[in-house]
Image 1 (cartoon, one colour):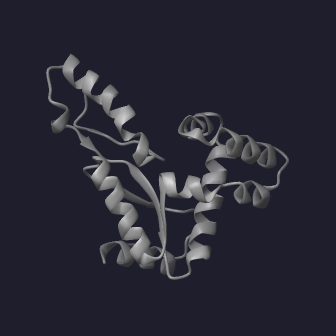
Image 2 (cartoon, one colour):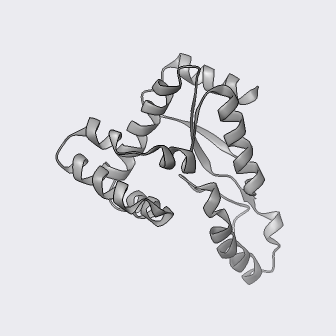
Length: 158
């Protein structure tokens, strides 16, 4: 058992499901689950240019769902997005990256990423903390400019 768990694309609403597995593992080695950090990589893009931020996150998620084998696709389908995952993979398989990104829904963004205005970003970050995340690790969308990364960091810091 490690000192922490570092998932990627964690949907905060599904943390209790994963928490049960963490508790079982901790019990096996005689540890308290409270001693284990939950430190997910959280995809974030925060800006006053909300649609531009969302578009970067959509393209990033489409790449992982459509182009990185089945692990990420299966994980995100497990969150209830089977139809969208199918459409993303179908478009990606045809080489249509833009159409694949267009199939990433607002519900998917809300479930497993932080994107939107600075205020929305801070609220979304708090959602992770309230769900039991002890150390969210902010990661940035592929193609995010230095300016967008700076806006994300400053926006989340408040």
